[in-house]
Amino acid sequence: MRVTVLGFQSPYPGPNGATPGYLIETQHTRLMLDCGSGVLAQLGRYMPIYELDALLLSHYHHDHIADIGVLQYGLMVHQLFGERNPGKPLPVYAPDSPAANAQSLVYKAATAFHPVKEQSRAKIGDMEIQFLRTDHGDGDPCYAMRLEAEGKVLVYGADSGPATNWGSFLKEADLFIGEGTYLDHNLPATPNGHLSVRQLAQIAEEHSCRSLLITHLYHGYDPEEVLRQASAYQAGACHVARIGLQISLQ
Image (cartoon, rainbow, N blue to C red; front, side, top):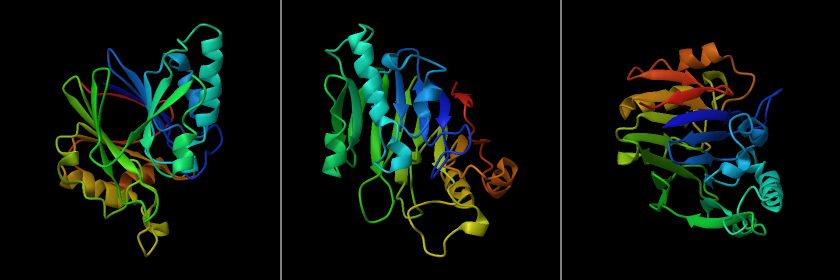
């Protein structure tokens, strides 16, 4: 299983940047996790968009879905050009609420909506996927994802505050892609559905994750400072997200 960081910044992309999006590949399957601003331009460096097998969305905040509309347009054009079968719209797995967002994921023959809920399961090619609702405020749902394929486990934490009940969901994760929205100096006094880098590192260490990828970072953060604040994580390799970073789970 290979992970390519297409975008990782939040709440908006910095110069030449992109907000969250990750290409996940096995020998048989290619899917994307989230589809933020600038992600499609990065995806094209690795594959044609019409070869995607599925898209999984954690939630509907703009930094995670900004490129959905242009993805739909692009797939429609590739169907017109005969490069993608119009009888096989791209499946988009996403929360069923807010309803207006969910309904927008059906676009002509280009995309089809597949709702997910807490404890949902999906099989996409050779990947088995589970979903867990995270602590991301009191409003609309946000789901972490656990992907298993080729004997490896990847957990994408999406946006997840300190009250997320990880339980066994993180068990034996070979890679945990987790958010480090805040550094020590700007961590709000009252939790608001996001983690700091330090909090993320502690969670990854407590659950013995075999490696950690810190993402959902403000574009102005110094990567070396991010690593310093992640010092609590000692169980494996710690990566700070950057566009184009690839991690192979072997």
